[in-house]
Length: 284
Ligand code: ADE
Image (cartoon, rainbow, N blue to C red; front, side, top):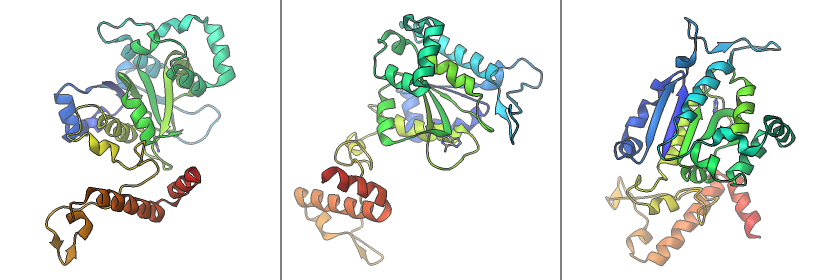
């Protein structure tokens, strides 16, 4: 998988050299490319922000550097793939704009991600992810979906966000998702992109030592959907007077699986009553 990241702080991404993701990069499973947004400015101060139209606090990221940066990244198509993302899928610009206005950027993005616009543009262009607290909530399901993509592009904004016309423009040309990692506000999209890249990267084939542990993850589609993982134990069998639950030493795999499920249900009820309610709704 190729991942491009555009940011004014590429140095935020040094953790991607370490541990699981670092190893995946070294082994060629992940090709991560960092880009400095300011490289696409043309003034001596390398300005990327300006005051918001309509007033209000803070600064907004200017559209021009973003447009040039994203155009440059998406023009760098992987070898052997024809670049078709600028073909508008046979629509005129006016048609595309009209359709966009009618269904909204996210509708267009979802329609295209469902493959309804044909495969040619998909293979040649990245899926664009814009981290923002105003986006759709990032979930394990979304991580699984994004892990199946060959090419992702993260556009990390700062300040009060990126001029909305950038999302309008690329919502027409690419599959675009504005994504939030939770109901809190970070100083910028970089940490959110790191979170998403780690969640996606560990799902790629060959990244985790034991592929089964992915299926056992909390929130994993399947049996663990809407369930948190229960407690885990290792040696020694007794530590500071606390013994490992007897059942785990019994060697009885069926009973161990049932106990783990019961623990997962208990923990979910205690820590995430919202998820527990979803489970009882779907089984009744
Ligand atoms: N940028 C600032 N806060 C964010 C959040 N919660 N999720 C994604 N991007 C963000």
